[in-house]
Image 1: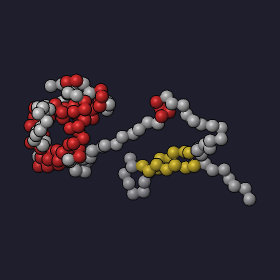
Image 2: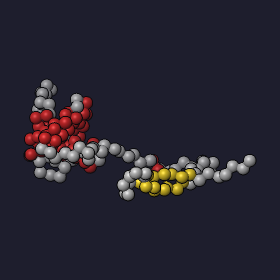
Image 3: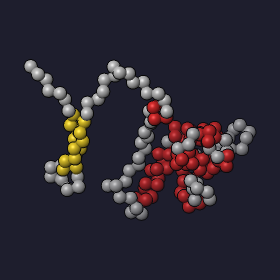
Image 4: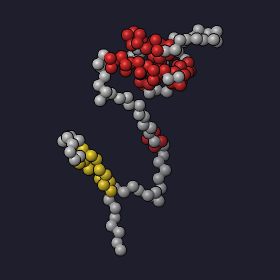
Amino acid sequence: MKRHELTDEQWELIEPILPKRTATTGRKPRDPRQMLNGILWILRTGAPWRDLPERFGPWQSVYDYYRNWRNYGIFDRILRVLQIRLDREGKIDWDLWCIDGSSVRASRAAAGALKKVSINTPKSPKTTLWGVQEVDSAANSTLLLTVEAYPLQSK
C-alpha cells in the first residue's frame, strides 16, 4: 500500500456504500478502489487534477468519478455510515468532532503579480489588537478587540 491510499480494512468499510459498477460503453469499468485512492490523493495533496500520478489511471476518469459521487451524495453517505459505526463503538466525542473544509485563496499579488496601488489609494487606519479576558469565563478564554485610531475632529 502506498501513501494516501486506503488500507484493506478501510476499503472493506467503504466498498458496500459505493454504487455498483454498470458500464454500458463496451469498456471495462474502472476499479472504484483505484478511483477513490486517486480522489483521496488529490484531496490530501491539494495538487491539480492533471498532476495525478499515473498509477490511479487517467485524471479525467478519476475526476468524473469524483464529480459523479459528489453529485449523487456518495461522500455524504460514506461519512454518515462511518459516523454511525464510530458512535456505536464510542469513538466519537460529539463535543469535539468536526470537519474543516475551509479553503483560503491567496491574492494574485501573493503569486508575484504586480500590486496596483497608486499614490491616491486611501490607506486603512492603523489598528491595535487587544486581548481581553471575557466576563464570567475561564482564565484562558479571551475576546479580541480591534481599536481604530481616528484623528480628532475640530469644530
